[in-house]
Amino acid sequence: MLRIHQALQAGTFPNATSLAREIEVTTKTIHRDLEFMRDRLNLPIEFDKPRNGYFYTGEVSGFPTMQITEGEIFALVVAEKALQQYRGTSFEKPLLSAIKKMEQALPDTISLNLADIERTISFRTRAEPILNLEIFDALAKAVAQRQQLELHYRKPGQPAEKRLVDAYHLANINGEWYLFAYDHARKDLRTFVPARIQSVKPTGKTFERTQKFSLEKRLRDSFGVHSGEGEFEVVIRFNPRAADYIREKKWHPSQTLRDLKNGGAELKMKLSSLAEVSRWVLSWGGDAEVLKPKELVESVRVAAKKILAG
Image (tube, rainbow, N blue to C red):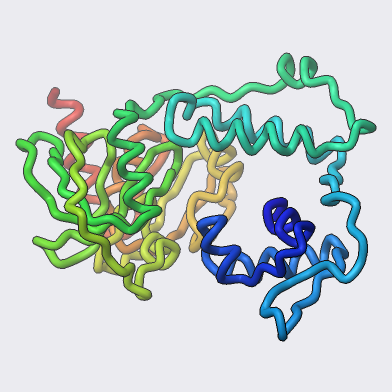
């Protein structure tokens, strides 16, 4: 928007097409920014039809400074600290650049003792994902530029194999990174773990992302990232010792929680896959009992026997 402002100040009557080409964004982005500048920042912008461009109808001394409260600065610092685990990734430079720009735009009257925040708030990760930063950066660029990729990908316990994919989406889910991509050999959408990708090579081809792709819909009935074709009503009973922990979080959008007379709790969910919830139940040890479905009951029983046998 600052560059749009500078073009309007120069009096060259720029239009959305010329601005989009110069700033390297879409015309849709330019139109959205112009609306924001006119309607939210109250800048006197109008379109001159004979000259086919925008101009300021009145004097504008400078671009409006960002107005921000102490509470908003506090939230920004907390968010930045939460992202410290991704230092060294391709997100670090643009993140720090954005924060620096916001700091420069702040009015001088706003101040905050950042040292106090440093002493009182921190984030810790139990198991930090191990990422090859070159591969991660290549995936991020491929998703942004809709590039087709050739991956050498290794599934757990199997040798690496070549996979030709269209990189749709990178997502961080529960602290872990995943690549959602169309696999040409399997003719379907697949989920890849960046830590298992041994090499990435752009093919030089681009693709059009299908309108049917929706990460929200894909993960709606999963307990993590694995989605299946089934429909399972999962019912798990927790004893009083574990029930309070269960009440402290929302574990799934479909969940219903019923308090039991003994102080325990009964959790119900509708899932499309049982792979991840099975491991989750086992993590509770003897504090959780699976009531439904029978497939999950058997899966937990078999896994528990293997643990004892080991």
